[in-house]
Image (cartoon, rainbow, N blue to C red; front, side, top):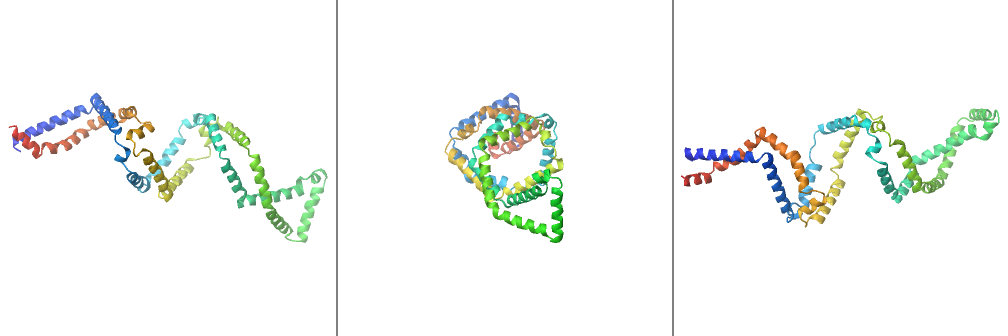
Amino acid sequence: MTQGQMDTATLLLDQHIKHELASLKGAKLRKFIEHEVAELFRLGDVVTFNRISSIDQVMSVIRRVVMNMELDAGIPEMAGEMATEVLNAPVQSTTQLKQVLSREQATAFLEEALELREHRDRVIKEIMVHPVYQELVSNVVYHGLVNYLYEDNLITKNVPGVGSMMKFGKRMANRAVPGLDESFERRFKAWLAESLPGLISRSEAFLQKALSDEEVHDSVMAAWMSVENLTIGELREGLGDVQLQEFVVLGYEFWLNFRQTEYFEGCCRAVVEHLFDKYGDEPVTCLLQDVGVDQTVVMTEADAFILPLMDVLREEGYLEALLRRRLAPFYQSAAVKKILKAGE
């Protein structure tokens, strides 16, 4: 370019940038965004979901961003700090549980849970056959029987001296036959182990019958009414900041492992495949409508975030620098040089 052509190109560039900066603020910017949003929604009425994305593309994003992205060690620390701030916020001591979850909502959750009768029966059965529960039953029966024999039966209570005589006889027998107590306990518990299956079966039948929907409903709601007037702060008493942060760290470590399991990937794929089965051949706006997103929603967020952000970018000089980086190569190009030369 000649010096004159360069000066002309520079003037054109400066005027172009000035024009763009003037259009990227206030009412002009909002009108521009509103118009483009309307155009995008119009385009979304004819472009299908399959044209802008695919199952493999979405799964690739999930693998990169959700499953495999290296997360900084500061994340659990920050999460723990935020959780602590939330639990120590003044609102915890002024908000009652019923203000967060109403009695009607709790009742609705409970009634839905009561519909899972098969699952409840299975849980009871699994508890009954668990070795820990069976050991508990054995110990309760054994110690209850021993306590009854030496202290709580009618004879020892009502006939003076009988209880003392029985305990004296027990001590004397142990002296005469060392280990008698241990032998009795071992044999009695062995007998209990043989009798336990029948006892457990009867216990299970009793619980299945006793835990009727009405009984469970009344018991849970009674428990709910005893705590619904407590504040969130009162309900969390005993959970200190250190314990809370430890739970956050444990949850974070669980997530790091869980996100890379085949189970997690399989669940994600099932959701993505269903999304494309349902919306793949439908216009993009069909999906947006089903999730409640329309032009009004988009413009509300634009007013809240985009317009203030653009003001900051313009005040900091970023917008002008961006436009100059974008447009300068064009005004310095051979095409512009040719146009300017032809106009001389």
